[in-house]
Image (cartoon, rainbow, N blue to C red; front, top):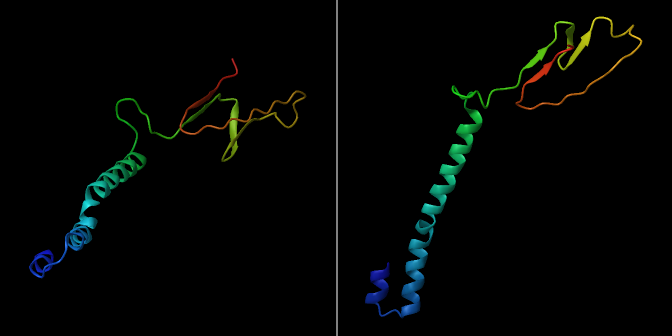
Length: 104
């Protein structure tokens, strides 16, 4: 296409416009490649299992004192909680960290 423009006596601005029109999209491939690599690494790190050396990335665990039993998905309770005179509720929110509850 550019050769046809040059042979046909096209002016410089037309030739430059044709070159940019033809090469423009290919100039974005390096940027697209880097963005794709970053997205791929992010997906890999999000989906991989825990680290075999340090254990990071593993879901958290709840280590409870044997006095507490699990009443539902997110609740642990002592057997005499309902009849106890002094009740304490401790809400704990944890992401990937471990939670340990001891009564000693």
